[in-house]
Image (cartoon, rainbow, N blue to C red; front, side, top):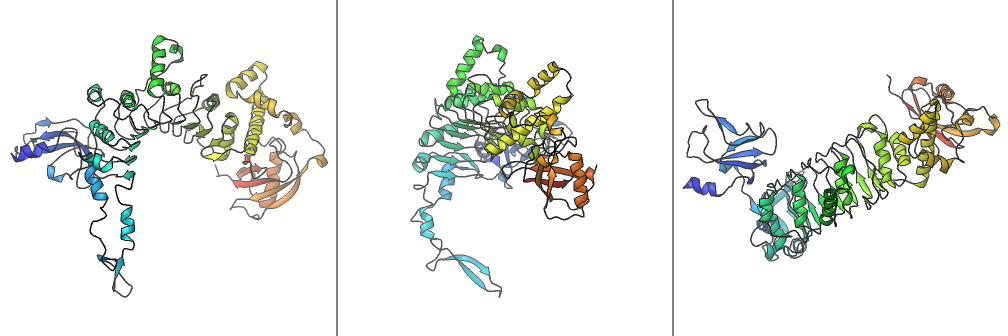
Length: 558
């Protein structure tokens, strides 16, 4: 009888937390062959944390026979007694524990001192701790006053039958890292709290949302939700996401990071005119017509053609794709991603500049975050940033920092100079044209824009009269191993000096070996430093003008 009562407290797929705070999922309930008594009830647990378990869901009896009770990865499975499991609570119970009634007994005494609370003074005496303004604080602990609540990691596994009485005025509820696993509980919460528009459920491992579970949920049960956060909730298919969206037609923000959405539909341009593709596009527009923000970072997405599935989300403004497996970004099509102005795509596998060039075809894109990709490996921010700015003409913010008009002009001019240097070696005009078309699609546009401001490369290397080219340059020594002064040194030098000779001059000034020198040109405070990489070109070629600054850094020895 005791075993039957214990069994009734749990069910398969029930989420639990043990007395040490580790979470897991019940995969088996019943006797275990390796136990001393076959009358005992054990819980077979698949833990969330690798190494918390001892096996893969099986055990060996005293005769060496293997008995399997459930399947999981090695070191994730355990058999535990129910008394090792911490009791779970409902949301209603958690709210009652967190908030206090105005007429509840005061914690502090008449003298505002907390009972049995004190600190030890330097002389070894006890000094009582006072709680000042207890009733004023209590006013802000009233459920009737607050409309946003945060109850994280509180072992909440259900909602509670009296939640409407307690929380019907709530607008935002944060239940991250609790023990919810039934979608019916979430549906019940939304039905009982009609004013709820933001629900944060990160870290709750839910049951699969299949057609059976979906059909048992009330239609449009998430109708009032505008923000739904489901990061790391064990979603394993994009079809589950589509069912969720069917239940929440007014959703504006959807966060899905850390779920396995590898089966996101691949959209092929060649099939876009087929009837099936047209139907899919129309279905997307209908389901996701209100969605403005979508986070699918760390969802095992591998192909930009999967991202094209989102191109028909007519209201989409922000897309987060960090920590996926994307290697290439493809050009946008007319009238697609028409409102997308913020994109984050860091920690992917992007390998070439064509992907960066492709982003210029997303005409509404104004803010971009991209870092930790193979393309940028070994390059500093001062090298990457101007190249990205020059290649994406509509960009206004890069990696959280605004792009000033001056910075854009400098980046685009230096981009043209670097291309002009690259095309010097081309003998054939056809080869040069193909190179520019494939590798630098903005070159002709930028050349037309700045042709009157740029000195042709041949002229930049010509020996013009010194008097007409003398400029004031201030050198800043940022090295530690040189014997030279760390004070700025200002000199008048010809802008036609080539970088190799400039390095000889630096060696004379601060006694730093030419091979160890890394020189950067800064024309103004608003511009980014430009690496003076090629020793065969002049300061004038790099855009140096009067009152320029050159920073001297030291390379690491090979």
